[in-house]
Image 1 (cartoon, helix red, strand yellow):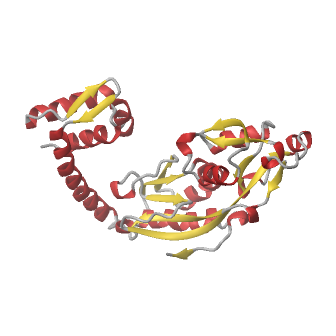
Image 2 (cartoon, helix red, strand yellow):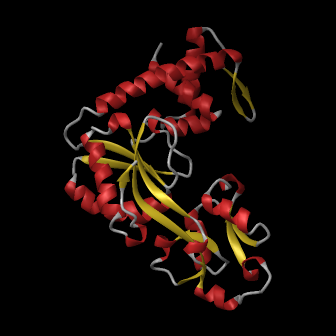
Image 3 (tube, one colour):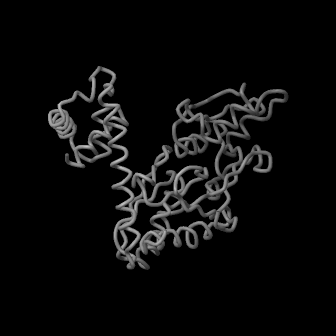
Length: 298
């Protein structure tokens, strides 16, 4: 059996979709469908039932899934071990982080990084969905939520505070209304798919009855809405330095989050992974006073 066939099988089993599987594998949908059909023919089993809403595992498919994940774990461990043997900082490193950290912290520092490490190619994955380091979806992650599972090396590299902001024009045009949530001003909120986000949880807990002006699925969209004068939003303080925003609720009445640099333990000895990790800790986070919180092993 070809390991690549199992990769296609796992991608479809986890996403329930040929489209999503093809995107994650960077191949066409027809290629994914063909490889699944070839796998089913080779083992003499029907692994998926195809419905209008997606691909669903059969009983036989669920049994194959358990074995495929064991094979995947073994191969990923082998790849991580091989990657950890490199002594020269060269090659590709995949970094998973949020869009705002990538845009405002990491990418501005890339010219200095490339000058120091010309042999390393950095791939940045921006998503609110956590990348799995154990499955090599990423080599390093910069996160505001500390992971609790997996064979991981975790380093605290900073501290992120949040406040509620509005544009100066919006705040002046909408004076405080006593007795109403957030003074009668409207709020820009996360959509239901991001209800787990700290800002969304805070708003639901502290101001469940506030008026919503706009619902958005990304922080850049929310910041743009604040700039446009649509309402208030919870924004990390370091992202507002260059904007004419007014702090409506200060950070000491809000919540904060540690910034964690996470690496799979098998990759700690890798020269290229260590180079990226040290650069992120020393050059990116520490270069922003708003995030300074010191770093420590944890």
